[in-house]
Amino acid sequence: MEVNLERIREAQAGSRGADQKRIAEAGLAIVDLLLQKNADYGGSAWQTPVLAPGLSCREAIQCRMSDKIQRLQTLLAGKSPEVAESIADTMRDLAGYSILWLGAPVSAD
Image (cartoon, rainbow, N blue to C red):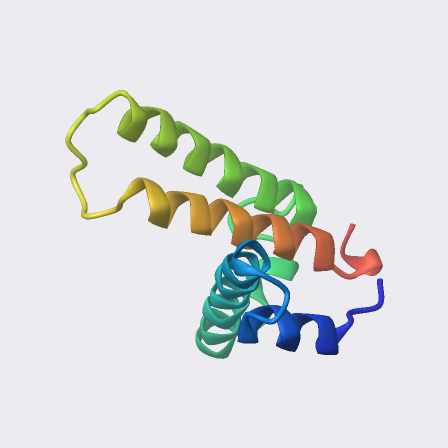
């Protein structure tokens, strides 16, 4: 998939309208967070899980996503979280895991 950086710059600058500016800002914030976490963790998301060596990296990412969906259900039900995580935080994590799943090396499956 080819990325059109000029379109992203225009959207971020607001020259493509308010909707596209919000989309660009939200998407770039998620990419920035993923880059920060990758600097901390390295490519661990794309490696075979140490404690679940039978899972592919994509299957492990799907497990993490499942955990986040359960978390989202709890938050949407209005239950008080044990840790400070908002619905927005959970949605960002799900979006990030989706990007990691899509970006996983073919050899990682």
